[in-house]
Length: 449
Image (cartoon, rainbow, N blue to C red; front, side, top):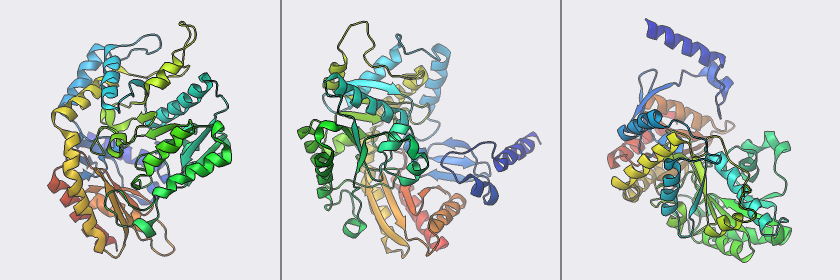
């Protein structure tokens, strides 16, 4: 009886909007939708308040590659809470943060040996932008203030990340708060030239030359950094053309511009390498990370920088703070403890290599949907994929919404934005689970029409 009362209270609060949900059509949800409350999770599956078991097709929000309720993580949280639940990071530290930074640096590309902790991808991006500005100022090039992002890019929702990001719906309401001096590269996605590509498309390398245009327009002496996702994840798994990232690196190097890779999604194994930088053979000056570093259990993010950048900051009076930036929860003991266990499990269970093994399984399975009339495009790389649905005339987003709702009843938790469905299943998934996911998806797409 008590459970029924509690459930009724939750439903009432949900309907009244006591909890203002992020990135949610709240009024539409309250007025039309059944409750979507997740009450438990284990392995690669969630369970809803209605008792439905859902395969987690996007690892939470790209952040739980080890699945849910991993016993070693549960134990690490308990043990750390009993030992050191919080430690201030200003002028003090703790062993977990030091050793985790060392391990992350060891995984990063050669020469990137310094880690600054934040608490999310948004904070990591804003930190990276500050690092870029501070670096140039210390070098005597304070006139380098411009940031170059990319259309369709997602770099979190801080004012800095929003400014360099290129998703219109995330920007238009907050235009008055945008950073000055930001410009954007053209995105690389042209379905007429690359639809249904497996892996990196051959077309589009020339889009990197758009950076030459912006350098010519603004003059290199005013540009601090270029920030891109190696694979654009939140906008629907946009895969870089062959040679594109290499060309961006060449242009940045030639013009003294820092190159930032936002690896909040691609970091820690999603591309079948520790970082996307290694998958694509391009070393940036700064890498941002978050999400998978703690399997999403305790929020954590950060930046990795080159030795040259770090050493540039380590100047001036020794008692002076070199970088006046940080967060109350930077390097939080709970997050550090979980981060260590995540890296342990990934190493011991060979999960980064497993991504490479599962990549062709997901690729072959997802591309079987090409014959469906309502599919406009399919693309994939690493353990990621996306499909674009053809919109219903006069009803943009309607087919995607219908598919999402049908999937909740059919056993899949999908990530749908507009008419795009993105996939990033847990690394612990079996090959059969990936095939079953696509088989169920086929049935659902046919069902919604």
